[in-house]
Length: 219
Image 1 (spheres, helix red, strand yellow):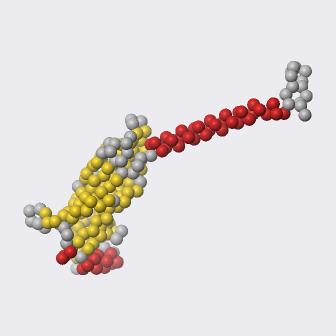
Image 2 (cartoon, rainbow, N blue to C red; image 1 turned 45 degrees about the vertical axis):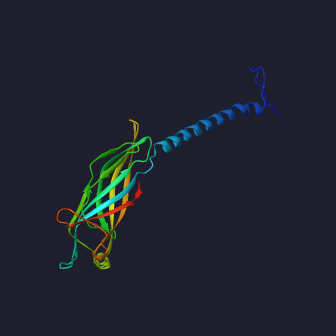
Image 3 (cartoon, rainbow, N blue to C red; image 1 turned 90 degrees about the vertical axis):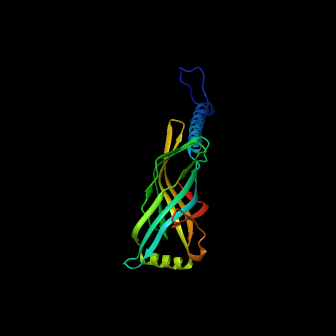
């Protein structure tokens, strides 16, 4: 039933005609919100970088000495590693800030962390680092010491080269986003008769192991 008209109106409108402007207003608001959400989503997709790839190319071992003469058992390590990283993004650059490298064995850190230089990596660029990681008489927990002794007797030790720190992606000259970087590179070191390393340096005391091992990367 139509609404009554006031004396000031020449025409009356029924319920359906009165509700029509409200429906269009709701449609316009919903479309506006949807368009904004779509723009935000597309911007997020475009500016979210594909994580960089890391490869452990080689490791040169100068010292790996386990001593049980003291309590607890201690380990001395002197290792140089070569790590390459590639930025796979077409339009996003990557800054490596406060990134450090260390070696671990069975989740225990066995060297000090070595800080890498602050580096900017452009689109599709490759960066190579060759840091030294060293640990002098690092105390080992009893379980780790027993496991390492067993692995040395077997002739194969799995070390993990860790790269941790902060990276920053950059789109053009205006937009930047920061991420936490965690990289794990497994490195199988062989000893004794199963040694597959290459003697290097003038004294031949250091052994180089070639890997070309893909690392696990999390950001």
